[in-house]
Image (tube, rainbow, N blue to C red):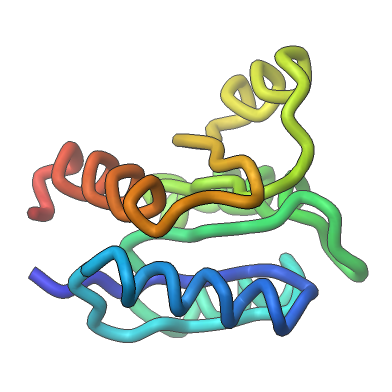
Length: 129
């Protein structure tokens, strides 16, 4: 099954790295959507079918945490798994993110295999794979 994935990161370079890592990791991609901040990400989510979101924390306009809060408050979006991809990673921060509904956390830099494992675990665990 091919997955529709949304990558939300203010760095165009990081979005390209994630896209390449999904490809190298062998993730079955349908459509790869991209957004430069949480507000753009929410726009994509409201008009496209997305199976999984990969998001940074710190972005201009709307960060990843705020985007997750908005998603969890929207019944149409609250079931979509979100993976935070960030350099941040204190135990306190990770627990706060999980409490807010984040499904997983990947610390930058990551290996393509690690990204694939995370994506497949979440999506196949949802019964979509």
